[in-house]
Image 1 (cartoon, each protein chain N blue to C red):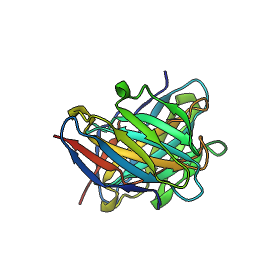
Image 2: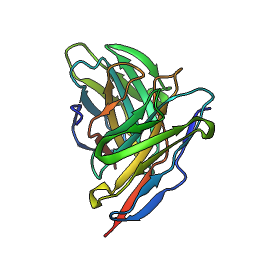
Image 3: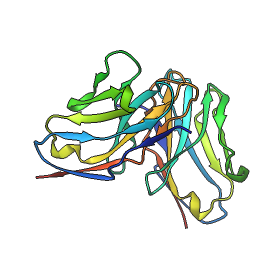
Length: 113
Length: 113
């Protein structure tokens, strides 16, 4: 069965430091891949998506992610975090034979001043 | 920013009561999804529609859950007889097609006392 793993439930980073949030998926083909962010008491906002082509995709607010097929990974990165990046980040997969999104368990990002 | 509208934002019901929430998808988006997000950040896909037709749905929780997307009216999700375990954030999302990125509303937070 398809699954998405975000191994880090919580990541703490100092403001201005770089960030990587990990995501691995289990699927035999190449799915559509997404990163969403959820701020407190808000819905989910799309950060970026990968469908095909260049494996490094750029998103909003300086976020990017790299699709590595050999590793079944789609890690999220940011060069320099800001306090406003504090939120929960979700990796999601849309297998090409299905319509629904398969979600990771989320990573809570805490920014230290 | 997403233009999916969900009402009400908060819903409090007693056990056994009906709970109904509504969703207006982004203009021009024919596909609508409903997800349940519990307090552990686990997502459960409930149902999706393309225009007024059901594309996929889970076994709707002992038939207590029902949903519809009538023409020219908001989509709705209703729980006939609420249980404590139904307490969650109910997220509505819309998209241009089944595989495109989904845009989420702020959610309806249901509390069943």
